[in-house]
Length: 424
Image 1: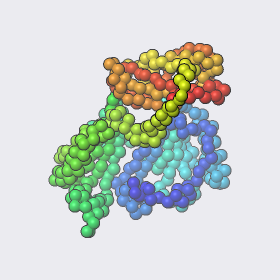
Image 2 (image 1 turned 180 degrees about the vertical axis):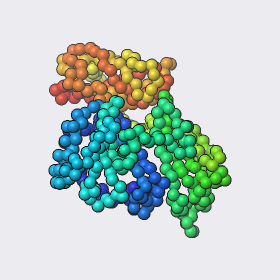
Image 3 (image 1 turned 60 degrees about the vertical axis):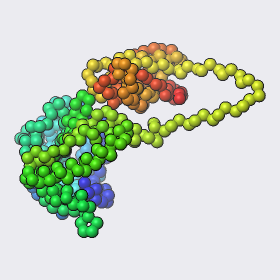
């Protein structure tokens, strides 16, 4: 990470930037995969020279199908405008590989970034949308022709959940951890012991498994031998014990994942596991939005004494819109669930947008959590017409697994003419 962060902005700015393509929008991306191959990738970053054996590929799938030929022509025109003369060599390299059109990127397009291999771009029709890929030509060729193994070393692939996961695997250069823990008089005694065991780490794997109510996290260190794994377990176990003991002193504000961390050596591997629930994410959002959503309301000034009896307060006016939760549209216990809302518009003007807070409750009415936002699904030129009552489908975010009911608080109404109503 330090090597990647040390890249100068000037070097990044020197890469050619094509003009915007109207057929491609960032919001269209449904999923993306990044693959880096090569035992010497990290050490090559340290020496600032990319090893010739390194391979890489970045593959993205768009959520919709686009006109490929139109997109290709727009891209070629943008390249010609940015770098006159490059369009010809790129068009000449065009070839069909599998279901995709592949183009080689000339060395001139990379400016000062000289690579020891050819880089290509591929566009094609996938099963559920359009595939856009970029990477080393050999890596893309293997992907497009289905000749990649798609497995991790050390049987890590066998431990992955089939429901859906994200994993990262990296071989670790032997000199990568030499500076861990400091050196000399300023060395940290506790970290010095960890540094000795980290010297024998050969590979690192990070795995995220997504379930209905939590995300399982696994961090695994592959060591040179079992003794190194045991030593690493003892060192990190000591630090972990201190962290968990400190967390017990303030359990209300401590993320639950800290108490679920387990660390153990298994042969030549050291494995650290935990699980993230919606409570962990709720605490993270609360800390991030402490200055906005978590700001305390201003105290009302004390009433001034009056000689005469105060006039009776006017009856509170009703908000122009009532919003009522009806039911979840699915019984699946997912954190992102569609909900049906009943909306009554008392105003004669159509409603364009609503800002709401969802408070999630269990069967007995106990509060489980809440979420506030301007819901994109509640934005339309005529969401609810004037003097109209209707049903609207809306995505509910961060829904706890045990949630059975939702209490809705209305904060803001924007009408189609731009006028705004704000509540408390």
